[in-house]
Each structure stands twice: as structure tokens, then as C-alpha cells.
Image (cartoon, rainbow, N blue to C red; front, side, top):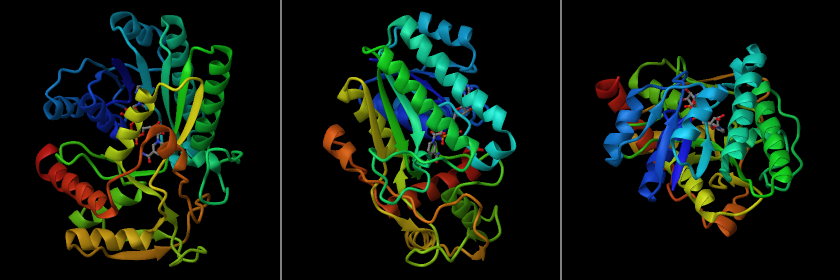
Length: 334
Ligand SMILES: NC(=O)c1ccc[n+]([C@@H]2O[C@H](COP(=O)([O-])OP(=O)(O)OC[C@H]3O[C@@H](n4cnc5c(N)ncnc54)[C@H](O)[C@@H]3O)[C@@H](O)[C@H]2O)c1
């Protein structure tokens, strides 16, 4: 089985390439390297011992995409390629709508044209908006607070409509919670472009001395210690969730939350990092960010029931693996 992985040199895509190859799939990677590095493909090859066809293309480019579909006999597509920075999406909405929506349309149409019936889409817990936690797949989606979130809701809708009109086209909409950690080799992981927007890379950069104090946004949320609660999931568990979605071969549109089902506060994550690495993280409390919600965690029963998928790696493993990659990246990989 041959899978086209768009955004395959990015954070989640690169780990999913490894999980797919481990499960016996072959992969073809397409990425424009706008938020990733070419070396990642070499590291995936090194880890898996497999040759991987790589295309440096923009997946909004219909001709370039169709060229890959013509050249390779594909059995499915996992579409990770997308812009993902919430703050940037507020400043550049048209760039976000264009990139994230056109790429999804181009790929879905290419699948229909070339008879590829399996499509897996990277959605996000953001689509739930300010619903009550835990978020369940059957909830009505609420408006999100930024263009990035809207692109995910719109792409979900587009893919549902296309699947409804084309019954042989199966779509898995995977709603990720907060991916953290790195492959245990320490060779691939999250490489933020500029100062990190996400908590774990911020913590590891404070630990290594690239950032001063960790800024904790908001300490008066109605949570256990006043800081925001999120559902952190190891990126390799998340990657294995994609394999489970592909191998389940369910027809029609399937929606799954991929998280642990456990809420962890910012301070709890800081403490888990300190305990698993022995490094103290200095922090300061600052105002909450507009649009941030108090708590976000998943109901994970559907993925467990239908895909047999559960996140296995604990918080300490997430911290340890993120830290190993940070140290390695600074000393060896950069
Ligand atoms: N990381 C998270 O916290 C998170 C949470 C929920 C959903 N997601 C979604 O998961 C997907 C992957 O996220 P990630 O964290 O791996 O991000 P990432 O930025 O590390 O990876 C995305 C990859 O897509 C590439 N890309 C972007 N636009 C492209 C285009 N038009 N053509 C070709 N390549 C393009 C980038 O170069 C990058 O390598 C994204 O769609 C993101 O929105 C991520």
C-alpha cells in the first residue's frame, strides 16, 4: 500500500511516515518546505532504512500534484500540508484560507480523478470552539476564534460534501489535540520557525537557554491551578492513530478525536518536565491571550472503540523525548 503524505517533512507528517513504514506501508512525500527542512527526509530514510520519493512542490499546484498521482500508484492520501500558526492566521487570513483550502480541494479532486478512495485529513480540536469539555465527535461545532480554525472547519465541510456526492470516496477527519514529544531516536521532532507558539517547544527552549523565562498566558482560568488545560498527546501515538485510521478501511466519513482524554494544566506540564529531566524551568505569569480557552481535552472512546487506538505514551515520556530532540537538534542536527 502506497500513501502520499503531504506535509511529510513537517512535525506530525514526518513521524507518521515512520509509523506507516513500520506498519508495512510505502510512502511518497510532497512538501514545499515552507515550514520544514529537507534534512528531515534524510533522517526519516535513516531511521526506517527505506528510500522515500520526495517532491518539493506546493500542493495547491494542481499540475504538480497530478504529476505525482500519474507517476506513483497510490492507495491513499494523508493531507498534513497546511499553515498552522493561529496568530499569523489573524494577520494573514487570505494566505491561510488560500493555502489550507485550495490544497485540500486540489488533493481531493486529484483523488477522484485518479480513483484513490482513502483520504485522511489533519483537523484540529480547534473546530469545537468553546464547547464543554470533554469534546465529543458528535458535538455541534462552534465558531472558532481565528482564520486558522475556520480553515479546518471549512475543509471538514468540503470533504464531507465530496464524500457524500462520491460514495466510494472515504474520508477520515482526525481532530488532533496537542501533539508534543519526538521520535525516540532524537533525529526528528518539532522545529519551530522563530519563537515557539506551542508550550512544549517553549519549555525545551527555556531549558536549553534559547529563551529566557517561560511566559504562562493566564493564571485565573477556572481550572485546578488557574492555568490553561490541554490534552497533550505524544506525536508517535498520534502518528499511529493515522495508521489505525487507514487500516480500519471504514467507508464514508469518519471523525475521530486523537488525544489522551487527560487534561493537563500548564503548571502540571512544567512540573512533569522538571521531574523527567531534572531541569528547573523559570516562568512568569502574563495576561491570557485573546481567543485562548480555559480547557480543551478529548473524549477518546470512539477512536478506542472503532479503531482500537489508544495513546500509550505518558507525560514523562513526552517530556523526555521532546528534551532529547531539543538537545540533539542544538548540538548535532542544526
Ligand atoms: N501541531 C499541532 O499542534 C496541530 C494541531 C492540530 C492540527 N494540526 C494540523 O496538522 C497538520 C500538520 O501539522 P504540523 O504540526 O506537522 O505542522 P508543520 O508546519 O510542522 O507541517 C506542515 C508541513 O506542510 C508544509 N506545507 C504547508 N503548506 C504547504 C503547501 N501548500 N504545499 C506543500 N507543503 C506545504 C510545510 O512546509 C510543513 O512541512 C497541519 O495541517 C496542522 O494544521 C497541527
